[in-house]
Image (cartoon, rainbow, N blue to C red):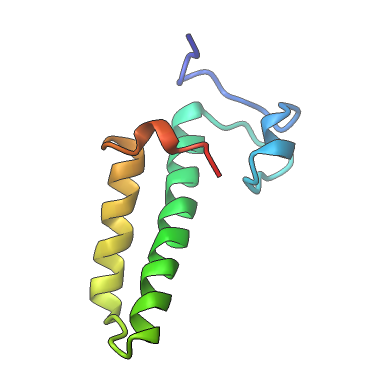
Length: 88
């Protein structure tokens, strides 16, 4: 089992293969990486929703879009999509 409190440094292959942008000379915990990945995926998913709504001439208000992003983040960290966090 992976210790989520143990830092992962930039030398880890995850830096090259995950698509995450990691700073040099900084260590990350698994929780930090999970939060960053959830945020990135939430933004991507919200952009799909926004694009579809814009095509339908509905568009989303900024507040509604932020709520969608927050909901996606929670789903990727704790909800039914937790097991899909690292899947493209």
